[in-house]
Image (tube, rainbow, N blue to C red; front, side, top):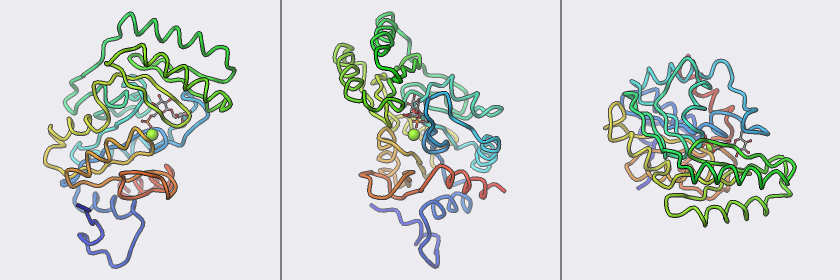
Length: 264
Ligand SMILES: O=P(O)(O)OC[C@H]1O[C@H](O[C@H]2O[C@H](CO)[C@@H](O)[C@H](O)[C@H]2O)[C@H](O)[C@@H](O)[C@@H]1O
Ligand SMILES: [Mg+2]
């Protein structure tokens, strides 16, 4: 079933997806729950995982939006939980990390994944093996590991083959996650769609219509999850991509500007 925001709100003329969906949040803030990806959605992509820039106003705009939504705003990211909080300080939003495998709910309860000795050894082996490819970065995310080739795209095939090989040895508790110039091995226990479903079963998200905004393959699971329950989904990027998302936002900057307008 296609959820027609434009018709429901009686808009007089077609408008870009981001304006429609986000102005619906503003009109009925107690009806909606918002799920936001971080890299490539709220934040512009950067050359390395560490070199992202969080505009100074963004945490405060998100804090104001969260308050407007009665706290029903969660971050759903491939990053680890421990990486996320300092980005949005002084706020600590409900968050799902490692593509859904770990989660902190609105009441502050944590679900984490223990790091086994075998996985720690695998991370070390991947880091050592990647040293031979100048520019390839290995990101240790605790219970997940990512190999980035953004600075060395000529090694894409080698990086993919290496991660595939370690994934094949890792066993059924692990998933291979492709992303933007990155391949990751992450816990298979939950994806972003399952994380969104878990939030939607709890206060203050429960009973609200979900809107999910993301930019990448990993976000397709949450697009699917929110569409299935009559919510709405927006993909950040250019037109023409294969996606479950029902609308498009052209860039993180446009999303940030729209959020800022909603709370000003
Ligand atoms: O689910 P997300 O919040 O979008 O996180 C996905 C991955 O984002 C990061 O990698 C991506 O962004 C980097 C910084 O802009 C960029 O350098 C890299 O090429 C992108 O793949 C992060 O480093 C990963 O751990 C996340 O899983
Ligand atoms: Mg992203």
